[in-house]
Structures are given as C-alpha cells and as structure tokens.
Image (cartoon, rainbow, N blue to C red; front, side, top):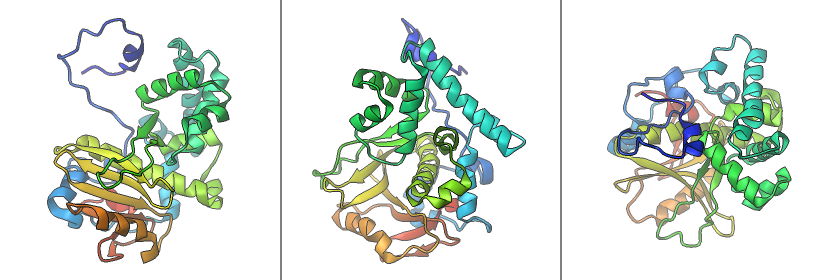
Length: 315
C-alpha cells in the first residue's frame, strides 16, 4: 500500500507503476464511518437494487445545529481527534496555511502564498455553486494561467472538486460549467473565518455548507459503489431549473438529489425534481429532496423527502 503520492503526480519525470498498481481515492471521513455502518454496501448500490426503501429514518437528535456541527467539524482524522473546538480550528487553519505556503510553492505551482490563499478562499465562497473561471481568478487577483495551475494542484491534492454538468440527451440546453466544491466542508471555517453562528445568520452560506456536506457523503458512496457511479449536477441555460446533484451509475440508473436547508420542505421545493422526472426516459432509481427535518416522507408523487442523516443511517 502506497500513500501520499500526490506530489509524484506533479513532479515525477517517470511513473514506473503504470499497470502495476490500483489507485483508490481516500476522502475525509464521512457520516457513515462516524455514525453508521461502514461495512454496509454503498448507498448508491442499495438504492439501485432496492429503490428509495434503502433509505432509513435517522437516529433521533439530528437537526440543523447538528448538521452544521457535522460539516464544520471536518472529516480529517486529525481534526476529529482535536480535544477542543479551538484546537480543531488551529489544526484546520494550519492545514490551509501549509497548502499555501509549503505545498504549492514546493511544486512550483504558485510563487505567492497570498494569491494561492485568495484563490482557495474564492472557491470556498463559491462552494456548491457554478461560478465562471474568470469570476474566481478575478476575485483572487490572479491571471488565468496561474488559476489553471492552482486548480490542477488543488484537485490533485483532493482539496477541491469540480462536479461536471450532466449531459442527459434531453438536457441539451443545460449549462456546461462544473459545480465547484471543497472536498471537506470543515475547511470553510478557516478559509471564510466563519463558525456555527455565522452560518446560521446567512441563508446563502447555510445552503452552501449543507450542499457541500451532502456532496461529501455522496462522493464517497460513489467511490465505493460496486456498480460504479459518477456525480454530476444540472442547471438550465436560463438558470430557472437546477438539480443540485445527479448520480448516474455505469448501467444507466439515475439518482437525482436536491438539498434544502429546511426542516419542513413543501411540494413547491420539489418542482425542479418533478420537472426532471417528467423528462427522463428511463425513470430514475430515486428522486430525493434532502432536508434537515427528522423523518422520511413522500413529498410529492415522485419525490421522497429524506433527512441528511438518512444518507449514513442503516436500514
């Protein structure tokens, strides 16, 4: 088992392991590893084989405050082991500082740690969004060439992720920009200098934190899927229709997910999911509205409302 090979991807002149190794993505710890059954099959595989019945009601006690704490605590083992919130914040802040001052310059990707930090902060401010590349590098005060190099580095180091637009045959007018995410929502704290209270006071920020938390859970489930699955997003060309996440398995099954920072979602919240369901040829394996409330229930004829904690709860 070889670990820590991200620098080799960027600096090695040769790579003799081609055809001799299997690469596995190691993401930060997710809810199923922390609160559920990490040995159970992938949630994606369970939904494909059993439909929405694979989603169990969560344990009591999960609410908006709990989900914010789950997100901002981070999934890095070192951060989780920190004895206090202050110690955790220092570890996460040190992680970001190391990326900007040590990792990037040592690889020749960025000469100015301040610009690197500004670019990462711009991505953090737009996590769970679909910003143009120009918006990001203008916000960071860097040129396009520098931004491309930083994007490649942050993706290789698994700090950020670009979720591609879904190219369904009936969605030809969809926006093709990728959706940007931090791999771990815990990095939002040190990058944007926010805490639990600040997120609660800012509706846009709250939605981004929860969307990033859900994407973090589902990214790991896709990686574990035996069937094989990839994650996408969908946004109409005029911005009127948007689906936060679409999981498509290699055998053609589709799981559509919308994330709402509400404990009591209404049928109006499911209108984009219903729109998608009507336009899909082979009907999706599940159409889910993920919320912060306590129970699983049928929201509309085709859309199931599911608490965030159901993503890591076992049946």
